[in-house]
Length: 253
Length: 249
Figure 1 (cartoon, helix red, strand yellow):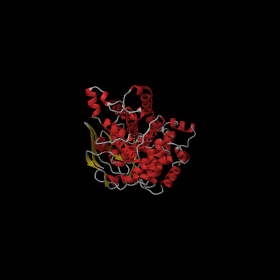
Figure 2 (tube, each protein chain N blue to C red; figure 1 turned 30 degrees about the horizontal axis):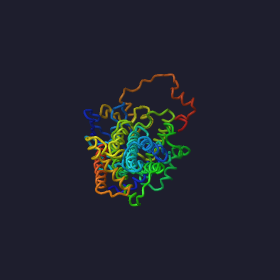
Figure 3 (cartoon, rainbow over the protein chains, first blue to last red; figure 1 turned 90 degrees about the horizontal axis):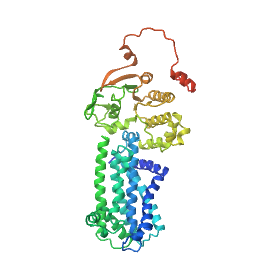
Figure 4 (tube, rainbow over the protein chains, first blue to last red; figure 1 turned 60 degrees about the horizontal axis):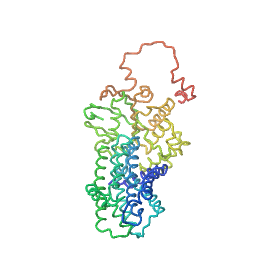
């Protein structure tokens, strides 16, 4: 690894974070849609949904957190795309820096921005009556799952960021990711779904991750479910990381 | 640079380009749009691999010693490679840090002064005019005193005043001993700045020499008496009250 990797990544991370600090609207818009979903489902549809838990907001929050991440990472693709469009990307590439720093800076920026958005969403959920008695350890486990999920989706976002031809193309990939939680246990128990839909919902990553976070919040034994959730996160992360780096290497040589 | 070739799919952009640029000189690569000027620069700046031929920059091979080449060059691309959201000063500090230099703040302040951007230094680049942006762009390229600088169409899209500002910055560079490879489609720009000029046409260098050598390719000029009319550029510059080239010398 290049001896300047850490230093260069830090400098470039500082640059991207400054971008976010100067246009905090990206964090707010990231949080607005999940919060709107949360209000809609808790106060409009929630009364009609039978989840078997006493508080629908408690049931809903894990899925909302994943939607927050899925919508947040589209800004990563967007920011990377803008760097590619302007000359600044080429300037970095023609300088004596660690080349992977350019991507890592965007990935870490995504992590920071998403964590801030997640905190905002959790605070709103607390106002809406979300309660958990989980321990510090439980919170840490939830945070670890969310960090892994963010990293996995961010590396996916890097690919359209590098290859997109237009701004719309750079962010459109996130729509399916935002809607994936709807066909999962995030909003309603999968038992209420018809056969094939239910089979899909029960075997897609969002359900495993949502269930693991929900059990952690509810202080219930997570069982083997948490390993399925972690396996999904790490699996997606590794595959996306490899593909993103392959794309990057093609792009710069 | 020797026998450089590059194709994009079926399109042969470079068909064997040979150029030698002397240390500390300004070399202009002329050519119409699409002649392959930018491709040459991108290969030399290690952004693109050549399909054939070899190129050495500051003694390093661009294909096998890319890291050493990057240490010795700076690229100013066709579009100002500046960060719009950061201020001018932050842009300079960013590059100084990425070049692993000490006292990035002092370097930034010094360059802001040299390029008359001190007052604008604290403003976001988004608010800059085209000329200021270009000046900042060139200032960013000077950080770390790289011995070789590539300028790809540095004045395309600039108004006449900004163009003169940029020309001055380039002359300043060559005076300091930097080797400058400039691409341009403006003939007067090459005439004004370059020690040597090469014309790239259909993927080959068709001529290469000093301005005088190039002029000798044509039959000696007949002496004609022409009424000296001010050019529109003279009129424009006088009206807007800018200093013209001559006054500044």
